[in-house]
Length: 283
Figure (cartoon, rainbow, N blue to C red):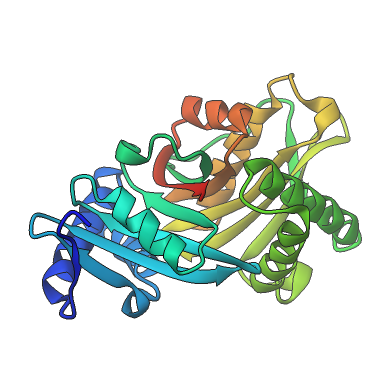
């Protein structure tokens, strides 16, 4: 198809691929240590990828199991009109869905729905908490109820993004929470906050300091539904910046699921640029 052939020697492709990934992260404002740490994440499992070329560019694809589903992944695509070949290759190996991770614009994948984004914002100076907002550590007694709420919200976000069924979303949630919080409330590097106005808790925060070089990851900066629409969303972003500096980091990173347009607009307005965008389509 289109003269595309799988290549046994991937050395020429890999060096160029890694250089392009690094350039993308640098262009997004990442420090060199952070760009290289993100590259390490981007190439996990690379030895299992299949690489093909038509002599003018490259395609890198993989079929794997993800939460009980057979999924194809297009890791690289620089061959003009190579998307069809990649999708067909994945379908022939049983994939029911194809995923891509993008840096920069969507290009030929513009019709793939957005399933999620990783975003980052540099934190400079000494961020101040908004007037009238008090931030305190969540207590260990409050943790179980907070955990139950976070897990339910996470499952709902995954389902809304459209990539997984409710059963698959619950399995992913169980796996992700166990991985990130193996010691629960006392997991090292993690901090949990309650945001209060006039003594009433209006939201919570969960961050992981030192998640990547110089980066605090904001797993959750949540304003309770009954308190939304009062400007507390922007206040929560300020709490995230404050917590980042409290942990000695220089940037905050977070994830947003596809379909959450309200959050995306908030992140746009508060300076969070897109590092990676995840899109997928059913075959």
